[in-house]
Image 1 (cartoon, rainbow, N blue to C red):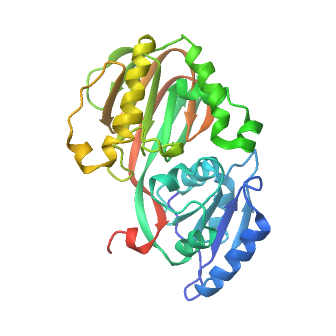
Image 2 (cartoon, one colour):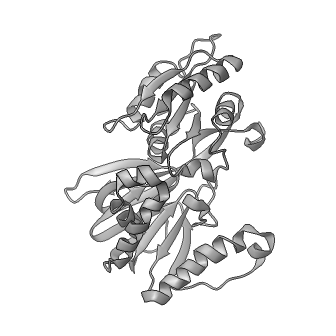
Image 3 (tube, rainbow, N blue to C red):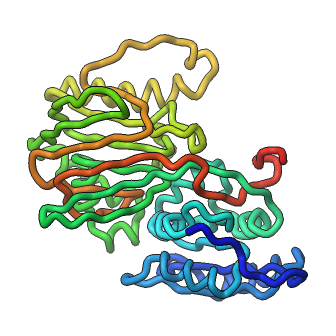
Length: 333
């Protein structure tokens, strides 16, 4: 999308709320938003409900056609991903009203998670920040190719299997704890990814791995810092390859992620400490990754499963998405 708002010159700007009816208290949201839009001098907001058939892309298209100057995403990570996909390369800003179990983009942007009034104030009175967008093309076994965006992370292997094994109703009721059983089940799976991959202009390589994750951001649920060097606006993707050999390999991975990333990397002193690389876990950076898989494998994007693919290409589109943030977090104009 390369459109700007269709609001007539001199008219009050209008926001459009793209909301997941399962994730939001609609009456409470409408009341709070009406007060905030009025104080900010905006017109009455437009409302577009998502559905299983339209998680957000179609709603955004209708909102833009109706003259929306800003899109407000009210829902979980899936809603944010779908809305971001449609707003790709648009000048129309996206405001986040975090809801659900993840809120991963909001977490990585240090936005308030549990304060509706503050989130609405940022939407109507904040500034704009440009961030990168991850893109992926998935080649299916039937030769069909699908194209999608992601704002946080794409995953192959354990990550996708864990999500596929998670009971959606249990996730809705107890949130992140629902993943516990799925993680155990996925860890018991001894099948490995067999692939040939190419990163940027480097020569192609063959690899066997348990998991590959490609991130535009680095922080997951429970404030787990998975990709410590990832930044939403550096024009690069950060990649994590897990290839543990037995119990010791998993211990090395847990030490790296929980202790080094979760504790050391969060302090000035810890950042200065040089730690040894381990074979079970490798980090790489790049702008484009192509992967040819030995067999169809499950794919996840921003916490949702996207079926199986036999090959994929993922790349970064720098500064392709505009996000509403507090004024003190927006770059100086």
